Length: 227
Image 1 (cartoon, rainbow, N blue to C red):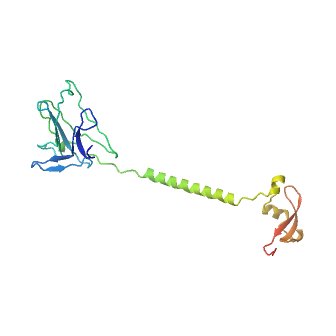
Image 2 (cartoon, rainbow, N blue to C red; image 1 turned 120 degrees about the horizontal axis):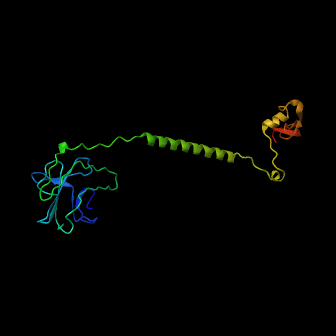
Image 3 (tube, one colour; image 1 turned 180 degrees about the vertical axis):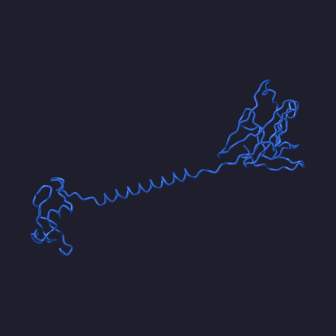
């Protein structure tokens, strides 16, 4: 293709036999460019002269057919044209999505086809406004999932960082750890009547574990200790 805004003649091949940038000629013979992607109605005439063996392609932005075609390609279509054939239309897109609308057409053999009046054709539909509800909902959902994932990651990191360190002797005899709440209950709230004495790092209390009723000595570390 010569560019992304052109007209071409293809005969049983993807490679154009002739091509020209989209344009038309006015009554004075001045050439005007046409934008095929501009969303405006465009008329096209495809004429084949079997005697002269010439295929002409003409474009216009109005109902009047210009005198000069944009493509005039000499070709013999007699090996291709059959006594019985179908005439139709097809379209395709390039890198961008697009819509193609065929509002009217006329066909005639051995003479000029009937002209089309643009004023009688339907209006070109305009694209509908995009519904932003779905993209917004998807964005909010993705943000919430991201926050939840970040929170879960932070929680796991905190638990791993603050996990108790298992000492070597605990691997052999099993862990013997008690919560502050259990020790407080065992010593009756660290009452003075349960005080056994003073150790190097704080006071030592006698107590009884609630679950096993086993007697224990609990040292309550004091921040005032200088050892």
